Length: 291
Image (cartoon, rainbow, N blue to C red; front, side, top):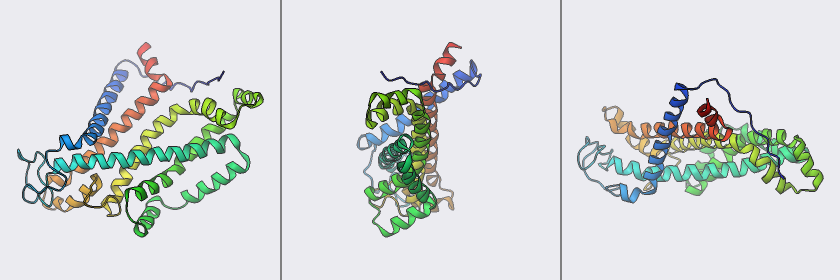
């Protein structure tokens, strides 16, 4: 039987009104995340116009035909924002899943096995982290085609170094526990120990880290697209919308600010949900409720 250690509950001494405020922040975060992901998933239904349909003049103000106005080419900004949400969330989510698959697996192996396995993986991780993330991505994407597969691969490779360090640290601590030593003595295999002993005990902080990495992926993708090396036309994401409408700031057109506000709100919402998941998995929510 697997003996699971309990991660220490974060005791902040905050109860009552602060607990209720935390619940409110969690509900707002869940609502924003659901709106963003739901809007992206049902973009063909929610969007009143196709992605590149021209319905008016450049940077027209909001109207019944375009609730958020039009962009620099006269396309419905709200429709493009909805279509762009689907691309942004898809690329960011897939890249983040690959980040945890690569970084988490190698980190667990390095932390549990130690020795030359830990040395090799750690040296590769140090080498990748020594190169500035944005510069490395710009160099690779300027040489290779900016396809979705290449963008996801670059994002996953660069960000997996952070997850590797976290996973390795937690796995090394867990591997030193008595119940893991007992599992080795019983003759359990490495895969069993990783899945039944290491992963359940490392899951709570990894869930919170997943939210942070997802936010980073959204911001990083938006940065690449804003610089012209991310999602390429005719597709679009929120970073591309920022790039297309940035000149509108000079003319005091608020269409240039809408994609940036959407990115900021989604990042805050995901962070709030990640914090709530950490509280829920470590028992802090129950502690506040009982208090």
